[in-house]
Amino acid sequence: MATCISLSWLLHLLVFGAAMLPFTHGNQLYSNFRVKAVNLGGWLVTEGWIKPSLFDAIPNKDFLDGAGLHFKSVTTKKYLCAESGGGTIIVANRTTASGWETFSLWRIDETTFRFRVFNKQFVGLDGIKVVALVNISTDSETFHIIRKSNDSDRVRIKTSNGFFLQAKTEELVTADVSEVNGWGDDDPTVFLLTISKRMQGEFQVTNGYGPHKAPQVMKEHWSTFIVEDDFEFIVKSNLNAVRIPVGWWIASEPAPPPPYVGGSLQALDNAFSWAQKYGVKIIIDLHAAPGSQNGFEHSSSRDGSQEWGKTDDNIQQTVRVIDFLTARYAKSSSLYAVELINEPRAPGVTLERLSKYYKAGYEAVRKYSPTAYVVLSNRLGPSQPRELFPLASGLMGSVIDVHYYNLFSDVFDNMTVQHNIDFVRVNRSLALSHITSSNGPLTFVGEWVAEWQVKNATKEDYQRFAKAQLEVYGRATFGWAYWTLKNVNKHWSLEWMIKSGYIMP
Ligand SMILES: *[C@@H]1O[C@H](CO)[C@@H](O)[C@H](O)[C@H]1NC(C)=O
Ligand SMILES: *[C@@H]1O[C@H](CO)[C@@H](O)[C@H](O)[C@H]1NC(C)=O
Ligand SMILES: *[C@@H]1O[C@H](CO)[C@@H](O)[C@H](O)[C@H]1NC(C)=O
Ligand SMILES: *[C@@H]1O[C@H](CO)[C@@H](O)[C@H](O)[C@H]1NC(C)=O
Ligand SMILES: *[C@@H]1O[C@H](CO)[C@@H](O)[C@H](O)[C@H]1NC(C)=O
Ligand SMILES: *[C@@H]1O[C@H](CO)[C@@H](O)[C@H](O)[C@H]1NC(C)=O
Image (tube, rainbow, N blue to C red):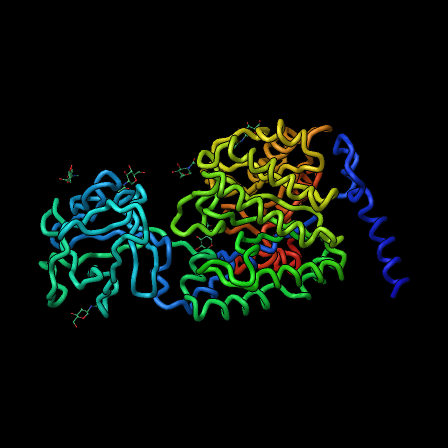
C-alpha cells in the first residue's frame, strides 16, 4: 500500500510537478503542463437543454419559473401590458408583444403563480384595478392560470380571492368577475396565451418538482448522469482534467435554501475520489453565484434577472462559498484550480464590483492552498479582453478564462465551413495571443465546442473544425475545456464526438 502510494505520488510529481511548485514571478515557468479538459456541464447545475428528459415529468411544465407569458385579449384583440414597463396600471391596448407585454412567472406551486413585469414589480390589485406596483414578492398577489381543456392556449387568470381578470376596455383591466361561462370571443375574461421565453435551470427543475419530489429526482440525476466510468473514459481519451460547474447552494449542505436540495456536495466528493483514482485534475467552477451573475438559466436565475454583486453582503456570501469549497478540497492533489465565478455579464456586473470580489475570492483560495490556480472569468457583454490584467498581474497563479463559440452572434450567420475554420485560425488565434503574455496571467479557453451554424456539414467538416480549434486553443497557456461531456445534441457531447471519431484529443 505504502509503495503504491509513493509510486503514484512520484508519478504525480513527474507529470504535474511543474504545476505544483509554489509560484514565483512570471507564470511562463509553469506552462509546460496544459489542461486538456472537459466540462461536466448539466450535472451539479442543471441546464435543461443538456438533458431535457429531466424536465419531462414536471407537472404543468409549461409554467416553470421565468417563463415569459403574453396574453392577448379576445375582445380588445390587444395584448396585456404593464404600462411604462411597471409602476402603474396594466392595460390591454398593445398590438404587438415584447418586453412590457411580458409577464414572467414565479411559480408558487403547480397551479399558483406570481407575475413579474419588465421593471421587476409584481402584478397586484388596487381595489379592482390590476396594477404592477408591488416590489416585494411576498406581498404580491398570486394568480391561477386556467387553460381551456381542449385548447390550452385559451386561458383565464384568476386572483386568489376568486375573481377573474377582464380587459374591460383597452385602458382598463380589472379583477371583478366571479362567474364565467364558456370560452367565447366576446368574453373579456378570455385571453390567448403565448409563451415567449422558457427557462430550464436548477431553479426551474427543483422548484418545478417541488419539495416532495425534487430531492429524489435530483439525487437520481446526480448519481447517474456522471459516474466513475466517465472518469475512466476521460483518462483513456487522453484528457487530463475536468471542469465541474457547481452552484452556490453546494456550500449550504445538507439543507440548502429552497427550492434547492441537498446532495450535490456528495456528488462532488465522489468526483474527487474518482479523479484521485484515475489521476484526473479538477477545476471547480462556481457556475451559479447567488442572485445570478448573468441572468441565464445556467447561473440559476429564477426569472432572467441578474442581481449578483450588487451588495457587499452578496459578494461576501459568494466568497464564503469559495472558502468552503477550497477548505474542503485543498488537501486533495486532484484540486487543480478554482474558478471564482463563471461568465459574469457586463454591464450588470461592473468591473469595479467584480475586481472587489476577485481579490477577496483569491485570498479565500490562498488561505488553504498556495498552489491551486485561481481562474478569473472574463466578463460577457461589453468589456475589454485585457481588463482583468491590472488585477491579475498582482495575483500569483491566476488564470484568465475566455469562452470561444462560433455561435450566439450574427457574425456567424452566413459563414461557410471554411469561414468558420479561418475564423478560428485567424481571429481566435489573434484574440488569444492578445491576452497571452509572458508575465501576465495564464490563459484558458474554458469553454468551446465543435458546433456551428453551418447546415448539413459532413463528418470531415466537423473533424477539420475540431482539429483547428484543438490546435489554436492548445496554445492557451493554461489549457482548454470542451463544453460538454454529455449532451443530447451529439456535437455538444464530447463523449459522442470521441466515440464517433470526430475528435481525437
Ligand atoms: C419600488 O421600486 C421602485 C424602483 O426601485 C421605487 O421607485 C418605488 O418607490 C418602489 N415602490 C415601493 C412601493 O416600494
Ligand atoms: C374544443 O371543443 C369545442 C367544443 O367541444 C370544439 O368546438 C372545438 O373545435 C374544440 N377545439 C379544438 C382546438 O379541438
Ligand atoms: C395604452 O393606454 C395607456 C393608458 O391610458 C396610454 O397611456 C397609452 O398611450 C396607450 N398605448 C397605446 C399604444 O395605445
Ligand atoms: C445572412 O444571409 C441572409 C440571406 O442571404 C441575409 O438575409 C442575412 O442578412 C445575412 N445575415 C448576416 C448577418 O449577414
Ligand atoms: C477576422 O479577422 C480578419 C483579419 O483581421 C478580418 O478581416 C475579419 O473581419 C475578421 N472577421 C470577423 C468576423 O470579425
Ligand atoms: C439539410 O438536409 C436536410 C435533410 O436532408 C434538407 O431538408 C435541407 O434542405 C438541407 N439544408 C441545407 C442548407 O442544405
